[in-house]
Structures are given as structure tokens and as C-alpha cells.
Length: 239
Image (cartoon, rainbow, N blue to C red):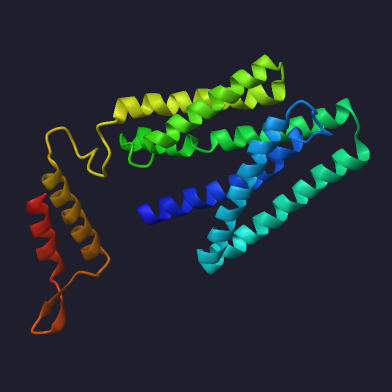
């Protein structure tokens, strides 16, 4: 289950990282002359995210690799479309609005990506999958750029980063609520310690193995099938 969850969040993170390639376009001098800082940080971020994607493509399984290459092709096509339209078809204010809207949409998608992790934290009552420093960085980054956008009266900056600041704050609140629960045994029950939780988990796994016909023991270097009713009774007694 943990492997599946990590794979899911890894793929979703890479997909959102691909969309970030569009972010620097809005800050380019010929699009928005007074936002060079937007270009520098998002340009650097795009390079780093591109490295992450390349590493993912190198080490991922074949199925995930094919899927990611397909997504990469789609995002590259979107990026090329935005660039060509902004350069050839739009000028002045229209170009700024077009690129700003695109950057806003994808920035909000980026900040919204931890919503699935926040849901997991609420469900498991554990912050195991939500590191504190990452949540703090999201909040500080969103807040800084939110203030920057407000001072420059730029809605394409303060709207998405305002959303990011709010979501970062929500993550910090969740961390404060569930900060004492950082392991898989967090939801085992108030009256159970970690050892008891492990025993219960082992018993459940054994019962599941019996139901699937996979419970086996080794006798005299040979493998023999366990008597399923006996194992079930033993597991029930342990639980």
C-alpha cells in the first residue's frame, strides 16, 4: 500500500512539475517588463523540475515511463502553443493577459497538489507523509510572492500565491494537530502501544494470507500448506 501511495504521489508530482514549465513565460521582458524576478526564480525552478523528470524517466518502470513520456509530449505541445500564440498572434496587453492566465492556472494546480496528501493526513491522523519543512516552505514561498504581487498590484501573481499561502497555512495547522503522530501505528487506538499495534497488524496479515491460500510453513526443509481453519482460530484468539 505504501509503495502504491508513493508511486501515485510521485507521478502526480512529476505531472505538475511539467506544467511548471509554463511559469517563466509570464515574467519574460517582452510579456511583462517589470517582472524579471518572476523569470529568474521560475526559470531556475523549471530547470530543476526538468532534472527531476529526467531522473524519473531513467529509473521508472516501463509502464510509468511510457505514461510519463506521453504526458511530457502533451505538456510540450501546450508550452509550444502558448509561446507561439503569445509571440505571433498577441501583442501588448493581450499578450500579458494570455500568459498571465496560463501561469495563474498552472501555479494554482501546483499549490493544490498537496490536497491529496492533506486528505491522507486527516484520514490516517498521521503527518508521516507531510514533512514539516516542506509545508513551511510552501507557506513562506506563497506568502512572499503574495505580498510581492500585492505591492505590484499584479493579480496574476497575488491570486495563485495567495492560494498557495492559504494551503500552506492549512498544512501547518494539520501538522500542529497531528504532529505527535508520525508513524503507521498512529491510528492503532488510544489504549494500544506500538507493540500491540504491530501484533494486531501481523495477525491481520496472517489472516489475509490464509484467505488467499498462501499461508505455508517449512518442515524438514519442505514446504507444507497450513490447516486453514486452525490458523484462523489461532489468529482470532490472538486478536
